[in-house]
Structure formats: C-alpha cells, structure tokens
Image (tube, rainbow, N blue to C red; front, side, top):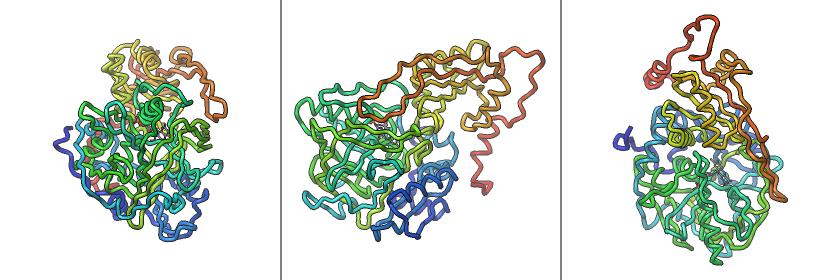
Length: 490
Ligand SMILES: Cc1cc2nc3c(=O)[nH]c(=O)nc-3n(C[C@H](O)[C@H](O)[C@H](O)COP(=O)(O)O)c2cc1C
C-alpha cells in the first residue's frame, strides 16, 4: 500500500473522533458521579478486560462540567475509525507501516482551538483538571498517561514527541519519568538499537542541555487526536527532513497536522489538542516519580525522574481530559504499533526473509515474542530462535508456522501442545545479566533466562503421517476480513 491511497480520516481532533465512536456505538457516556480517586481507574480497567466500549465520564467528583475520557483506542473497531481503515489487524498494520515510511509535512498555523484559554505564570494551577489517581498504590495523580512530551534536539533543532508519564507534584510542578536512571551527569541514551522500544530522545535532549547548564523547554500535550497519541508512544525517530511523530500522524490521517507555537517557548504543538502544559525541565534537579502501576504488570517507582516547572497552560473551552489505565492490558495497541519495527529489525539483522511476523503480546512487556515464519528446512526454527536472542532483548521466543494466528492464544497453545516434544523442541533461552535496580527504585526485574520453543509442524519427525490442519487458511481469513463490513458484521 502507498500513501497515495490513504483516505483522510473523518475527524479533526479528539472530539471529532469521540463523536464518530459514539455514533457507531463504540463509546458510552457515564453520567453517574465517579471519583477521580481510584474509581475511574477501576472502571476503566474492568471495562478493558471485558473488551468494553470507550468511556466518557460526564460527572467527575469535584470537577463539574469537566469530562474525562478513557478506553478509546484499543479495540480493532475503534482503531479502524481512528485510522480510517478496515478494522482488522493486517489492514491497520499496513497503514501504520505506510505512514512511518511516507510522512506528511505538518502545517504551521497562527492559532488554533487549544489557544481558547491561556493561563500564564502564577495563575497556573494543575488542579483545574480532573486528573485520576489511577491505581490503588500510585504515589500521586498522573496527568500524563497518554500524552505527548515535546522537546527540541539542541544539536540539530529537530522536535521530538515521546509518551513519558507525568505525576503532579504541586500546582505548577510535575515529574517526567523517562525510562532509565538519569543521575545528574549521566550520559544521554544513544538509542535503543533494537525494534520498537524507543530511543528516549526526550532524555537525550534534557541531558544534553543539562551538560551546558541549561533548562529544557518542553510541552506536555494532553487530549491529542488518536493518531498523534499513537505516534507519541512509538519509536519514530526524525528522518532526514526532520519529520517526526507529527508527520507520521499526519500521514496516517491523510491530512497534515496543524501546529501552533507555544506561548512561553518556541516549541510547536498540535493546534487541535485539548490542553497544553508548557514548561521547562529544571537542570540538575531529580524528583521521585511513583509508584505507578505499569505495563510490566507491576508498580514502578523512580527517584531519579526529571522535574518540570509549568510556565503556562493553554486549553480549549470546556476541555476534554483523556488518560489511560496502564497495566498488563491498556488502552493503547502496543502490539500493533511495534510489530512492524520488530519485524524490520529482526529480518534486517538476521537476513532471514522467511520471517513473516514478529508479534509482541500485550502481556509480553517483560520479554515475549511469537515469530511466524515460512519454514522450509528442519533447522530453521532453532536458527530463528538463536537470531532473536542475538538481536533482540526478549527472553521468551516461540516460533510458529506461517499459518498461525499469532494473536490467538488458542492457536499458539494448540501448536505447542500438538507439536512440541520438550527435550527436542525447547531450549533454555540466552542469559541476560540481572539488572541491579538503582537504590530507591522500585522496579520489576525479570528472571535472567526465558525459553525458546519450536512450535512448528512441517519438518519434525513423526511416526505417522501428519493430517491436514483443520483450520481456514490465512488467505481465506484475510479475504473474508476485507469484506466484513459488507456482510454487515462488526
Ligand atoms: C501507553 C504508553 C506509556 C508509556 N510510558 C512511558 C513512560 O512513562 N516512560 C518512558 O520512558 N517510556 C514510556 N513509554 C514508551 C515510550 O513512549 C516509547 O518508547 C516512545 O518511543 C518514546 O519516544 P522516543 O522514541 O521519541 O523517545 C510508553 C509507551 C506507551 C505506549
């Protein structure tokens, strides 16, 4: 697929997207009063587990007239609306891949809806928004759980937007927790170098400025449209034109992203966002962030987080707040967003072009990959497992045949129980040195080894003929998936 055939999405901003979801029954309003203190987090989690609709909380305790929205971008039907594509994995994955490669230049505009209200200097008070305390053991209220943290690279002037969480410390101070232990004087991260994990460019910008004694101007963009939100949480390094997350989101949308300049610094931010927190990262300061319930499935706390002083808030009239409950499952399709980069990384590094898909399941944050491959020789599954250990830092690796639906646990488990003889087809994984957490840090440290499992069928030895697999082919599945709407099915 190429960018020429991208169809422009049917919305201009988060509100427009929410309206489309609501019109199609994918978003429900909750008018009962709900508490920002744990209750919103509990409802959002329960509804996610039940594969429920998006939630629009109209009546948040202590915040009359300030709605809060969650769970609006994890189901395939919602993502089909967000990306204006067929609501199936393959179609969405192709659109994502296409936008990453064919970015669309953003447009600078003099002003936009996010400038409806401007609050500057001493008047800044983060408590005006209905920010949840998401999890029971969280150390505070997280204003940024699904937002964009924008900074400029002091070396080349390129902008970057990453999703890094922020906890409110007081009326005009937040944390920004960028993965890593960034002691004062630490070297900037050099980039992850392996698929999909992200480079933590924000940390690099902050540490580079700090080396020169400088603060880092920043903007925390809240309530972005879903495509900007997807781009913020995904590794999209600036290309040779300086095109970054904004331009990938524009390409996915089929129309440029409108950008306006901040009031108190020269950063450019999305004009149609709901809320912008402008500020600067204070050099040589570190603050505690957390604990916070994280996507590893554990709480995590970082005493060496960066500190942000908020210098201005701009927001739309009647702003809609948007956040996500983070955890083993969350309102963000990490598997979808990472699958292309993981595949590209493994194929380019190993040279194994028979690898068709590298899947990272929701619960796999501590290191799990399922690799779908066209197997033509008996030694290939083990070679692929070895390549995965050599080139990617994942501990559990399962290789399955090309016809497996890697997102269907039942399919994957069926292959394991049907094809694996443990002594022949399972190997203790490569060893990863146990990371020692920095003092004061609360962090889940996974075991040092995982396991490699060859769950393919074709070239193993059997004492009897292997019958045909009784499952529709992937071709047939793709064909009917592409006509799903035509059948009137959702
Ligand atoms: C929902 C969600 C929450 C995330 N939270 C954090 C976070 O708090 N800190 C962090 O370092 N990375 C976090 N990440 C990962 C980064 O956003 C991701 O690695 C991204 O690529 C970083 O941007 P960068 O590559 O421009 O640095 C999160 C990702 C998602 C999808």
